Length: 503
Image 1: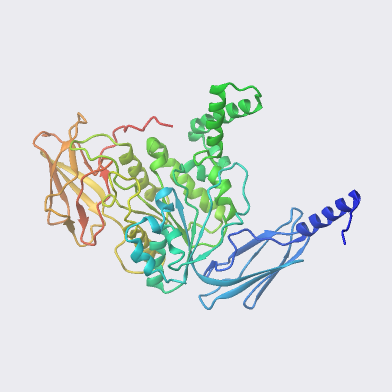
Image 2: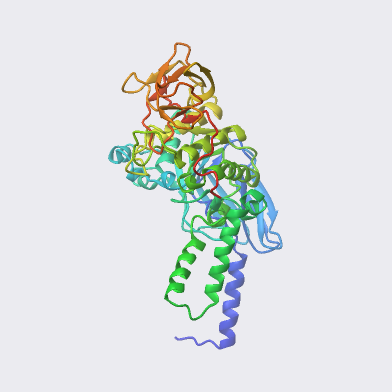
């Protein structure tokens, strides 16, 4: 029998369906089957419901009740839990959500741009890695790339994945190798939240209001405001000519893109900001290399703002220094990439609980995406295992400390040498340059002294004033300590660099 509805009846049906939809309790996608909750932590669980609706969240013997506020928002905090058997989390309102296979362990953010996004399937030895990827206690969730100035609450098509030969290819390679080392060492579940976005600029990851409140970023914000105003003008114009139409499309891509201040913060990060984590690992900087001096302040601002908004204290934040890339040069030259690496190194002195994995030795000159992600993940894991989990292992690359000029030689002192130096491949120390007060650098001879210092000189420089090491886009360097950690690129001078005026 065919039923016929009046227009009034149809509207009533739509209204009832709408009310039922509003009544449903919902969770953002960060909460799904197979998720990992941070152990020994008061994990926040949040969602939406009908205003005033009573909500109950249960897990194990815990039961937490609350009511949705006038906007329908609600949250509860779970009591800290220890590692154990898989759990079930139930959210009960006028409807019920039941999440299964929930583990308690260690949760880390893996973020940045394409080298963090880079998948296991595109990295070295994928066939072998895939065959050995039966790690059900390693979980990862991949977030989509959405750029917007309006906060996105949930990405419903993205859920937690359990590591297996069938799924590992889509995992962040750096995130996976970091997680695998932690899992094998600690024997606890590891959850990785992968929100990396290739080509993203640091300012896109920061709350726009935070950037606008800082006077030093005024030129950056004004530049974007001008573009936004121009886009609005062209949007309102109904008779755009060919050139205007092209400009309109280009500006539209910028408005949705990965460099606009606040775009990724709102479009990606905001949906899971506040989820219980141990810390974050980060691999980014390529897109900001042309503004390396600005990055000295921009990168610490991003870390500090994440920590404040996450509400979990000064959680550990470890990043990867830029790898070697582009053509090798036989003679010393200025380098924006070297200045960006310097800005990254400086951040360790500006903020507590931060650290840097140096990979100046494992890049590829012809490819901005080195395929060796195992060593990257393991160098990051060293920082976490030593500082968060109490392992007595070497974790920090040697770093320049001070210099002393003696005649026509400079003697350099270093921190974190460990058990001494180990030059790679040849005994000659490569990668040092030296200059006098004329700022003209030349390749230098360097010798490791028995006490761990390094002596540097060049016949062409009789009155040395500065020394640099690894100061190039793709430097030829070979100095490690005996724990296989490469010397951090550095310069002893503070002479103005090529990006000093780039805002």
